[in-house]
Length: 117
Image (cartoon, rainbow, N blue to C red; front, side, top):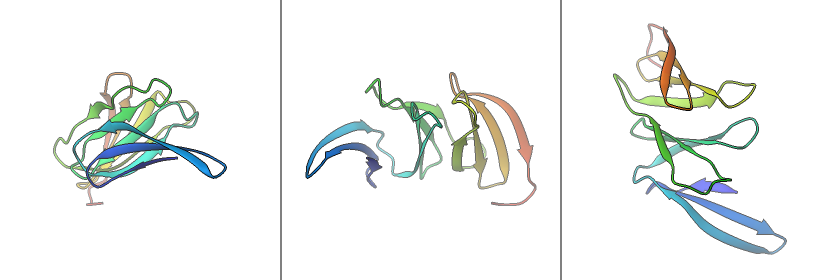
């Protein structure tokens, strides 16, 4: 079980029967608004209240890596483009939908909805 706190800390609870073990995975110092796993569960996207998107790879137990930062408007949400986990899509408050390459955060495509989301 992965969950986050308002302080921006990502936790992992390993639960087995009535026993559990808690581990702090990452501290990004910003409140996390959503957590989204890739279809194969190898990458976790963390979207913050300030509009920043981080990636975290549970199998590697490393730090969360900043992928996308607020540009013209805060990111409201992000999700993986299936199949696979090479690309993600995001939407901003201003109605901009973007497709990103997860490996380096390159923006591949943009679509303006011409309405606030």
